[in-house]
Amino acid sequence: MPQPSADYPLIVGVSGIRGIVGHSLTPDVVTKFAACFGTPRSGKTIVVSRDGRSSGEMLVRAATAGLLAVGCDVLDLGIASTPTCGFMVKEHGAAGGLQVTASHNPPQWNGLKLFRPEGFVLSPDEGQRVAEDYHADNRRYAEWESIGNVHGNVDAYLPHLHRVLSLVDADAIRRRHFRVVLDANHASGAVFAPRLLEMLDCQLEILGAEPNGRFEHMPEPIEENLGGLAKAVREARADIGFAVDPDGDRLAVVDGTGRYIGEEYTLALSILHRLAQKTGPVVLNGSTSRVSEEAARRYDCPVFRTKVGEVHVAERMLAEGAVIGGEGNGGVIDPRVGMGRDSSIAMALLLELLTTREQPLAEIVDELPRFEIEKRKFSISGLDLAALFDRIKIHFADGDLDTADGIRVTWKDSWVQIRASNTEPIVRVFAEARDRSRANELCDQVHRLIEIG
Image 1 (spheres, helix red, strand yellow):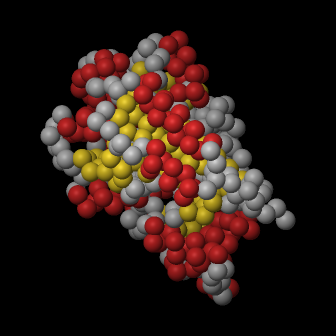
Image 2: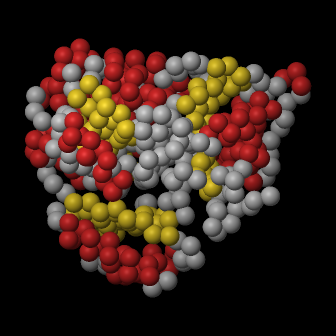
Image 3: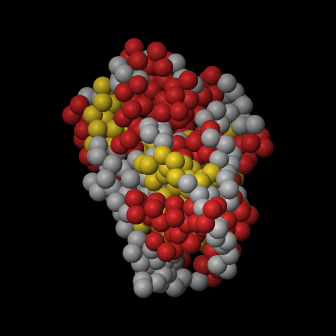
């Protein structure tokens, strides 16, 4: 039987698991993990969905078997976005949710993402308990008469989309008949996003329209992967181009000139528009660009920073009564819809922004201050992380040091953050400055420190 290894790791995190299908992530692993999640929720309903990867159908069946075996009923949404899964958990009063997804990871990866009854991901403590139960093989199978049942839900995304539409001036957007190019990349975005944009009377061109998991490009919605979208926007003379990641919680944007404006500006523009409607606190993670902070400052709104991870952002948003928040990877959280990153509300807010401002997106973007953010990742196989962090502290001793989430060093005009990923065997490095050369140099310095070993 295939086993986890350094080449094929099974990553057990606070919000679920990820692994390589057929190696570290097998049907028996998924069944066992789902059963451990379901055991304390026996007799209740769990919402289950998947992001469209080719391995998703097989793994949904494995997860469903584990949940039924411990006495949970399953509401199967089929292919749906992660935010739709969270929305439907709360909508149906379910005890939790389970999304089969590996987010932006390459196609050989898949995993499980777990939700609490409030419709957002498990807290670190809750996730740790499931992980401990998994490692301890702590699951309790139901007797034959208590085995759960499966219920299907056709067009499960519609209640979610109707909520999104109720929060914007849909009629005004419809009158504009925006020309939109959507890069769905053959995943869940091919299911919900066209329907949303059609409901807003957009003239739509879709790239990757079949949700079969056969990605046309690497799934992370970053500039190097979206050349096809940029070209299609220029050729169609579109107003805007949208790219969603496989599970639909992140949104990247291309303006009408075909310029990739970046995931960071998805959040910044959403903040700018939402605060024009209602002012209030904004919550960001520590790796999010200063451009989102500057957007909030325009309305004199307080900004709070958290650890990376949507659960940390969501919990702080609840505590502060935030109007909007999110993460700079294109993850917009609007509490009127739910407490998870959601590309659907992000698309709607940006189209409403274009409607109210009556300007091309490129002009609106150029009004915001320009910060250059560089994002890199490095393998940590065989790396002594503690020793690396010690070297970083010494090397960057002239900056303000924060160790709340990895290491973040801040100067007047720039910052750099180094943190181990919770979902991949890598170290992520983020650096931001007013000019690209400074951001690149900060990342290069970290890379040299990593290469020391």
